[in-house]
Image 1 (cartoon, rainbow, N blue to C red):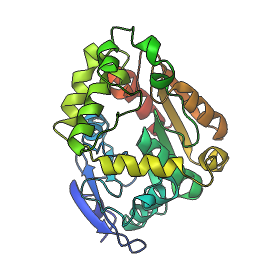
Image 2 (image 1 turned 30 degrees about the horizontal axis):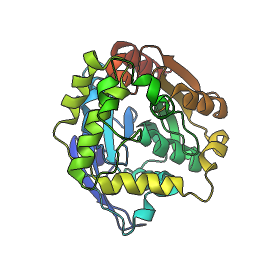
Image 3 (image 1 turned 45 degrees about the vertical axis):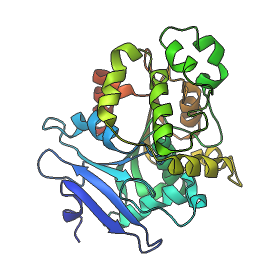
Length: 308
């Protein structure tokens, strides 16, 4: 298969010779797909899927911006194979190394642009650290940094419960974690959905945009438990923090000042560790900058891609 045929619009499947796992990715392109303007979008591994990113990042692939977007579904999610053991779901090295299988499938010496949001950002960052010559541009959006956290939704739960924006979400949940103790995919999905207002600066205005983008998706509890259980049990918990200096990609980091899940201190720590990284912190913005600060977000990302 040629590089161009591998990025035709639509759904694709390929099998890794290294792991024998099958991976799914979805390509969006406004006209003729472009290798030079290819953006690999690493989706979160805990089960959120790619639909919310396909919806939110679609302006990057319209006729004016003309980028080609490739949404990569990690192992265990959607139509990508579940590994034999849940212990094989760490952001680094398991999930990040899968990106190199994708690179080889696409016949690329290096990924032109790699973008990751939240947990997907941790996977993308892990790959840029372990394969520094395989990523030209790196975009991290409200990303996780394995080995550290800035989760105000846990540390300031009592205070936030008095904020009318979040009162209903917090009082409906008996636990400050992303889910209490669900037993099924359906109960896990219900718990996550109830907490989505906490991920916005202005949930009354913007929450419905996210819910519409997610649709009727059911979140797999297996993926969430496996991913975060593996990351918490890493033998070298500071591996990702210590590896920041290895990144050679031109890096843009965007964070929301009001993100209660992946706070701006994570972005600041990452930016300080990656040589030449550019950091943008948006005010009045939570976990989804393309929703709450859409016009600025699209302008900043397009400017970065053009080298401005």
